[in-house]
Length: 139
Length: 413
Image (cartoon, rainbow over all chains, first blue to last red):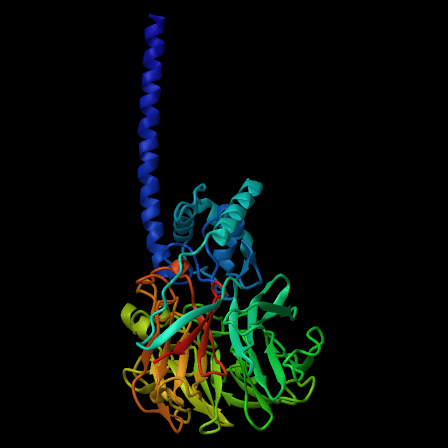
């Protein structure tokens, strides 16, 4: 009897996990789709369709600490833009990036989640709460 | 995590650098041949060829700590067998005139004296000709050209896209008058033989020029000619005026002949080769139709947008067929901000000219540098034409700042 109960419990919790991970997948898919829209509209020209950037001009957003690392710094780049000499994987890039603070918190969270999980990148999602708190600290 | 990422990036970088690139095949008109004379020097910007065939390359990234490389074919067997590296600064401009080699960093111009054997007397002690020029990274290349009266002309690109109050920020208006034009956004003239000149000793020769990476002195008419990079982001910032296609084609890249005192209209207008007009930029109230800067020059040629004309060379040799004499070759670096449309450029064009005026339409002369059929991402591009020079035998040379290749193009009948 006890064995059955344990088995049932395992089955139920496993099913629950499957359902919640499915829900997570669907949510991630929606976020990624929304993020791609923002990327194509505001980021693609400079950073290119493959995230590879433009030599000497606009940095790549693939395989770099600036995208995969500290999320607060990454959100800060979107909010404030960036115009300082910066070496990324041994190369320097000269074009300034303008502030994109006009994007809504949700758009920033979506697009950063999208770039952290596209072009071969794999990193945790950026949440609206994280963008909100970064924007508050930024003021 | 950081350490792992660092390792990963290092491996990827070394891997791509070590991998042998499949050679690209450069297409040229019938009767011409292409030979590779240099490869893997890195960011080779402009080049100059001496009367003895020595090839000078100016690098925008130090290679083994040096920013200038000279290649020499000592036994005249057609192979560069001797390399001299000097200059501890990066930059774009390089030129030879009256026994001196001139080279620029992004803020200064230097010269080196050559002896009778065409060797540089003091490779590590150049004389500083010009100093203290604006270098704010964006459009910092100081391309140079010399006339026959002892002057040197220096491009000082505007560190800006359209002189907006906040550069490249959607919705930010253009400043009027544009304060950048006081120290940049034009061509400055200096004496080629005077040391340590600053803005004070220089003359703002031509203004209203966003960034002229290509410039050459035309000896047929004894005037300065330039190729200009037009502004970016018409479609991205003003999609209601410029649709995706229109934004890819506009504004025109341009070629001008400029005389002392000329104004070419940046940042107030851009050239539109469909309307053949100087169109007011939207940052200054333009709607795609309104014209502006009525006193500004119109260009001699308007090319499709964003192709980045990085070098200009007037052909004065005898080797190529007659139609090429006094005509202009232009190296197009290739666009990046036509995305999501395909990118355009990555070739050398020719424009037949007489008395300093085009006598026909421009045509693609050498193509295939990108190594791909259609360019959708810049990361896939193998080579980008950046510099042009003419050899003493009437051949021309093309440099590439993506991988550091140089090609020589001959005509063999």
